[in-house]
Amino acid sequence: MNDIKFAIIGCGNIGKRHLAVLDAEPRAEVVAVCDIEEDIAQKYQQLYELPVYYTDFKKLLAESPAEVVCICTPHGLHAEMSIQAAEAGKHILVEKPMALNSADCKRMIAAAKANGVDLFVVKQNRYNKPIALAKQAIMQGKLGQVYMVNCNVLWNRHAGYYKDSNWRGSKALEGGGLYTQVSHFIDLMIWWFGDVLEAKTTLETKMQDIEIEDCGISQIKFASGVLGTLNWTTAVYNKNYEGSITIIGEKGTIKIGGRYLNQIDFWDVQSYPLPENIVFDDKPNAYGKYQGTSSNHDKVVTNVVAKLLNERHDVVEGDEGIKSIEAIELIYRDTYLTQTP
Ligand SMILES: NC(=O)c1ccc[n+]([C@@H]2O[C@H](COP(=O)([O-])OP(=O)(O)OC[C@H]3O[C@@H](n4cnc5c(N)ncnc54)[C@H](O)[C@@H]3O)[C@@H](O)[C@H]2O)c1
Image 1 (cartoon, rainbow, N blue to C red):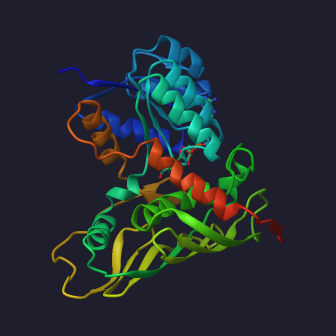
Image 2 (image 1 turned 180 degrees about the vertical axis):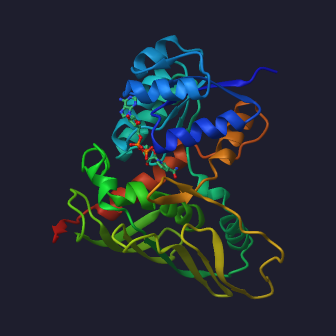
């Protein structure tokens, strides 16, 4: 059987991770990389001994035998690149956030459908061990009625994270912290509790010199009736403090915590104890001076390969990816940003 051929567009922080996991995936082969910065594209072509590199993604789409392209560029480029990839007959694995608005997500879904290709969205936190345990408890009704959920994304991003980037902190290309740091958490809550129906939100930029918020709070109502609170910031002193989701149910309480949803901080569920001897070993993506969420991209890629080989269907596709973007639009709607630094 032939390996599935991949190409990567954007070889920055996360593009590097895609390259590493694809290199380790036995049934995948990377056939090209692309970065608008030639030295970066060339560096990774040489490092992985790839046949070719590109600086123009349209040229890659026209020439490369890649069957799947991983889109690892800034958020604001995801929609157009995905649509052009679909029109070139490529399957797409687009990084989160799928796009910066739901209209673009719809165009991406339509382009994939019209061209008979698959559109996958990276949501690697769904594979974290604590998330899988909590999901099982919720889906089996072990918590009874779920009343409330509290989500905290209390992280640090140093000034250079924004200053040294030509897109982070920009309204047009990053959109806001919900798209970047928080979209994983929103995806999980929607997965468990349904769409976001209502939100009241306050945003402020307290610390950084950026066009988007660095502090936000929102009260949310989910379609299942669950009430939620969401607190997020990139202004925590020195390093990430917490990435957590606490679920308050009729028959149990679960706090998934650690710094990036990597451990169970509290589990008290009627007649359903936390299974013993689980090793919580999800690792973060580490980018030098800061850490992101879990690094389970290997599981994403393995499942994309399995889906393309018609073996199983444990993947997130465009119709699910759009839900967190619709929720983010709603959470940001009717807000204005106070700049106080
Ligand atoms: N799933 C996750 O946990 C996770 C983690 C990190 C980043 N991401 C996502 O990945 C995307 C990229 O983030 P990053 O941190 O790697 O950013 P980055 O700035 O480190 O890397 C982006 C790369 O894209 C390249 N690029 C920009 N425009 C291009 C173009 N027109 N053609 C080709 N290359 C181009 C840049 O030169 C850069 O090398 C973002 O959407 C981000 O949300 C996801």
